[in-house]
Length: 342
Image 1 (cartoon, helix red, strand yellow):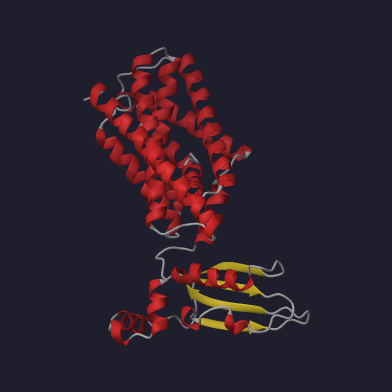
Image 2 (tube, one colour):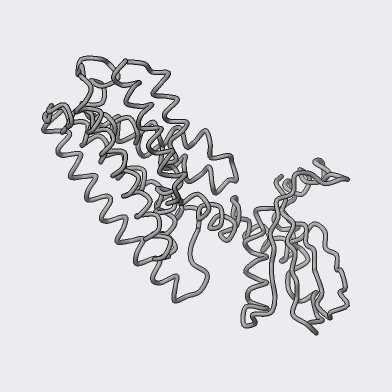
């Protein structure tokens, strides 16, 4: 069971700390008094209940601006939680559970909290010089792998490519109705893909390309299996964040879908092979649509939504429009795939 340590630095003179949260939601709770009059409340809780706890804190203190909540991951605790007690608790009859225990079970979200998820994804939506350098390096390595028909080089490029963050960021921003994160994610995606395409076209213009090599030819034809791959990559990318799993390996999966066909498109355009470039371009666009559509749906199915009612209405409306747009584009591409490549 993953744990989180929540530290609440309360406003000066705030005394009834016991009323902030429900005791059934915590594993351990202790208080540090401060000379300044501000109290620090430490709460050890299951990661699946942190969102409920943070919402309770916000409901109690959200009208004030003189408090601070800090959320920290916990690697281990001693003594550890008794596994047998946990299993016994899970096997309890529903009728025997108290009202608080039933509410606690209902509030388990089976993921990290919305606030923690937002901060993690915001941190990887990048437009710094490091992001552009990594995009450039991954495109150069991928282009060499495609030209030389080297799968190992292409895989190496996928490891370098920082493509996961901006696409998951766009999906989360759409789900939450966060326009600032949406603009930031879209800028990162557009700038990164533009740089990759320009570099790929330049390399295709300067280097002789053999379109018959497998690493290139396999990315000039689109099938319905590619739609499944794109959707799977999008779901895996979002789940890697919501479950608190390392995104490094999942990032490679997303890069599998997006990076090689994008570079292949640029190489073929630069070489003047526009018919083949069309197929690679359709494949790239298909993956982009699938990754983002799957991301929005995955976040919605996990119950990720804005905090307050007004933002929730805007987020739901934006999510609905996004799903309609992405799904419509995917249907259109499916028709193109059926008529052109089947």
